[in-house]
Length: 72
Image (cartoon, rainbow, N blue to C red; front, side, top):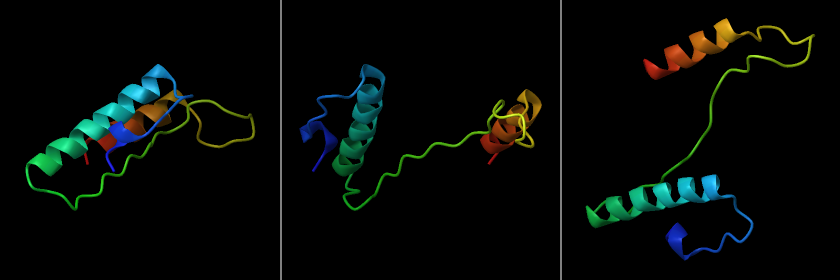
């Protein structure tokens, strides 16, 4: 069932917009004949701050990680 048919009563506006974008992509793929395509939404990133005992947290490491990720 497309996401536009689901009910999200407690969802924030930003999350709702993301859900609708994914739903639009799903509907477009269906319209082009790709009916069995699964869409997976994930999050990735590198923290730049945290607890003092955590290793590797810095703005430089976060920039390197995100920069290299965009090259993939």
